[in-house]
Amino acid sequence: MRLRSVELEVPDRDSAVRFLRESWGLLDAGQRNGTSYLRGTEDLPYIVSVAQSGAPTVAAVTFSGSKLEVQKVRKRAAAAGARLGPMRDFDEPGGGSGFLVEGPEGHVFRFLAEKKRVKKLRPDRDRPMQVTHVVLNARDREACSRFAVEVLGFRLSDRTGFMNFVRCDRVHHAIAYAQADNSLLNHVAFEMVDIDAVMRGIGRLKDAGIQPFWGPGRHGPGNNVFAYFVTPFGAALEYTAEVQRVGPSYKVGGPQDWKWPANRNDHWGVSARNSAAIAAAEREFRFRPLAAA
Ligand SMILES: [Fe+2]
Image (cartoon, rainbow, N blue to C red):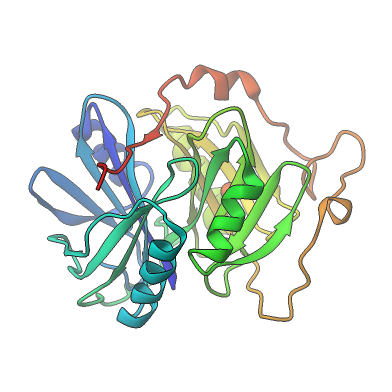
């Protein structure tokens, strides 16, 4: 299974798409039925879709796998009594069939078997490769990560004092749950070619008038380099690189393994989190609940 894309809806689709292409570095992957599709340089048909709606919304976080993998998730979800959408074909770049499923706090995941992949493009330091993780706020991160492991078939990689990290392939985390008093989207991370590409991204966003609200830095769990930004359409996005790849022998870390010295919350300690900038981004992305079956 692989994290494939994030399906977003915003009040002003055109300006969000313009930002994602001109500043963030994504490439046009076409339009269908009022939805714009954007891709990175990896072999995925698209990695972000943007549709228009009255309020910022996440329609789904999409994973792609084989038909068998998708069927297995569906079977476990049905057995667990999770809220499930019907099995159906999707009219979008890459096509494929699959379903939507809701986690314990209303986070919506989509699992699909794509009909076709596209050709990888030449690596480009000014363009994201793919979406590498999505962080979700959770009131009960233990219940959420248990759902990811037991129902979605993910593996727990690490737990810190306020986050649980789960993976669906060798990438250290595809989803992380952050302890919060809500179940909103926290941020979406885009993998860049290398650290140089992350730094170039910081410069490109600076040219667009946007300073990182945290970063550059290097995280503990996942060991990835990061820089976070609040975009003009309100979503928090991250450029990241050097995300750790792990295997079955990876030892699950706990809060005691991820303690920082005073005045530090990443390996480098060169930049502090700007909470005012985060608070200023009032446009919160909520998940759209699945229609009752
Ligand atoms: Fe992140």
